[in-house]
Amino acid sequence: MSKKIGVKAIIFLLVVVCFSMNQETPAQKKRPKNPVVEAKPVAPDIAYTVSMSKPSTHLLEVDMAVNWSQMPGTLEVKMPVWTPGSYMIREYARHAQGFSAKDAAGAALAWRKINKNTWAVETRSAGAVAISYKVYANELTVRTNELNDEHAFWNNAATLMFIKGQLAAPATVTVNPFGNWKVATGLPKFAGRADTFRAENFDVLYDSPFEVSNFNEISFNVQGKSHRIVFSGEGNYDMKRCAADFAKIVEESYKIFGELPYDDYTFIVNLRGGGGLEHLNSTALQVNRFGFKPDSRYKNFLGLVAHEYFHAFNVKRIRPDALGPFDYENENYTKLLWVAEGGTEYYSNILLLRAGFITDKEYLKSRASGFQSLQETPGRLEQSLEDSSFDAWIKFYRPDENAINNQISYYDKGELVMMLLDISIRSTSGGAKSLDDVIRHLYIEFYKKGKNFTPVDFQKASETMAGKSLDDFLLNMFAELPTSTLIRS
Ligand SMILES: [Zn+2]
Image 1 (cartoon, helix red, strand yellow):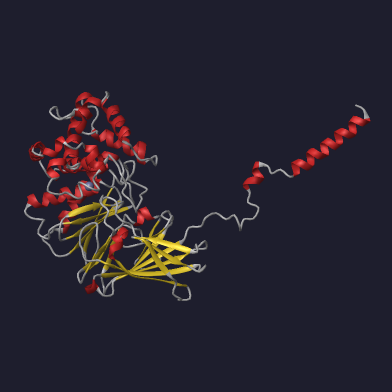
Image 2 (image 1 turned 180 degrees about the vertical axis):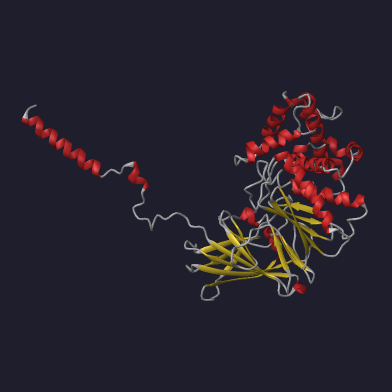
């Protein structure tokens, strides 16, 4: 090695060293130079208070306190336009009134509406914003709100506004009941604060209705999990009998899945109107106050209970592609409502059968009338189950005088197809498999793994249990129907 060469080499090495000193290693690159400037997004602290000081006005009073280290200059708060489980745009913002916003010092903040369901508040860099508004609540259905001198019932999606882009944020709800009313909801209690509840995110918050009244209640346990029934209003119900019968429905569901996927469960029963809506660990039910006798009416009610309860598995956890996390400002389209609703309706009757509430003969008689009714519906030649599911927003939920001619119900026809699918799987598997295996497969392979399922996934799961292709079955369920109109378009 010559000296000359040695000097050149030293200069080269110095250049390399100097150059590399200006380069960041991948590890250095990941480290923020200034942790304050590059801090991760922080979720807002959102605390709602719902009051009902004047029940005769039907106005729920909502306070929404937002504390946020990253408060934007313009805070957009939005009212959902629909609530999951009821597939229609309901424009809940139309019931909001008296909107106002203040900073921590109580100074009014300017705001303006920027579309039908969005209020934009100029925060003036305030770290805390207090929003107040009222919600007119005078319609008792399972997807709307009611406040009167007997009770308050509300859905959070129809009541509590969310912050744009912050549906993953946690929230608390404090209820100020009227008089000595009690509070029932599926949300867990916030430790140490009376009538305060917490939701880990807005999909949980919006899936947890409230009933506030002097309700009667009874609890029962199944597999170590607490279940509570809340009855609001007077009626001819027998609480102990209901508890025993609801427990049988829960137990039969447990036998299918081998677990109950919640810490506790609340049945909210309003003794007026009719219908039900499923939620994560609760359900809102409505039944005529005299709907508990005679037995035939009571069994109809148990069918409703079984349907909404089974949704805790099918749709709330075994989730079709588009059904969660939810978009609360637009339609959430899926071709699978026939599985979510038809499948649940099928199982509601199967649970009644397995629990001994109805006989084989009663079960088959009512399915026979279901087939009869379907055959008498001209719409069966016009709309497939998947199309019926997809267009639920504009057709099934908005029927007109022509509906019988161009629609079928994904509940009714879905139930019948599920029954035939169950029979087909039992037949081709020599009795080794059934629809229970399909629904359990979806529970384990999709819900337990944090995934939603698609139409293809449903067919594959069914074919796995049947041990053969179900292409023909799914396309040709009824021989006289055009193949394109049964399930698929
Ligand atoms: Zn349903």
